[in-house]
Image: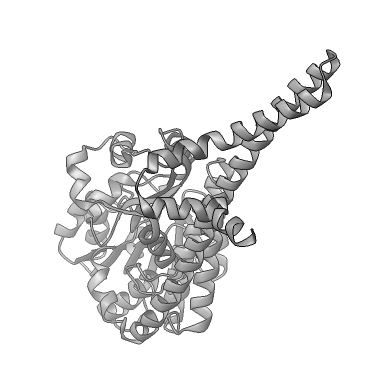
Length: 420
């Protein structure tokens, strides 16, 4: 079995490409099963976040699966449009990559913890879709335990730095004191919760949470003494907003240029700071052309994020060493499974041969054949059957001394010589 990672991330692809390759929750199960049904694929998982889409697959030996073709056809995007943004890792390098992802070492914000939760959720979905087997299951457990160990043994998570934190801090930089400001938060997921927490910690006066499901908006708003509204009423409240941070799973823009323009007119051109953390984008990109609008996408936060990494760089170096050891442990386990499978297959072959020859011998005895002749024939047939394949392989090895030496060790021939 060979482990493969194929995907793209914020490091290799712009937002305009990444948003075309997002797998939403509604279609995820079908996508997972479709991927697993590809020729040669025995196990599959898909990690799809704002910053990355990655396919994790185990491939049968001797089979080469065109995963990029599957990705492009499934997402209805031309192969040429994505090929320069795609990376593919196999074997040990692929295992190292997924452990780095789980630990936050490959994230836009070094060491951010949200990716671990996203990876666990992706694993849960794949498990529910019955696309995870022994190898991916074991790899996920290694990934989760490695991430936990790194977070507890290093300072990789010592500073409260995340995209949500960065968005809140950027709002402070634009507006200064937030104690008289109003923010509208569109969405109610984990990222929205983190944003709400950071905004309130920064002294925000008023928080309005907008969501398609009003009950979810109320649940989040209640924790921060905020107000809850339905997304359909957003234009009515947008005039109040000094800050808008949006992070939903919508496939269509929620904030249009015309909607924001009307709000600006009612605000007498007072500046509005908008951060779009969603992929695909929640805000029409043309909105940025309006006066008094400061629009940032998730990619725009990259430069801000870079200034917050100094504390974590030393910890990351230690984490890389820890990951190296974890990778070696997993590879040792993985290789041992191949040996175990070979032993199991060979023993099953021996049992099948024995059972057939034994059945023939019993039939002969029941037919009145001479017991001594039956036993002698059984022994000769069993010997010939069990030695046939090794004999053919030895003849094929011919004068390959290394192969012959290994064969003698496997068959225990040198050991027999010593005992005699």
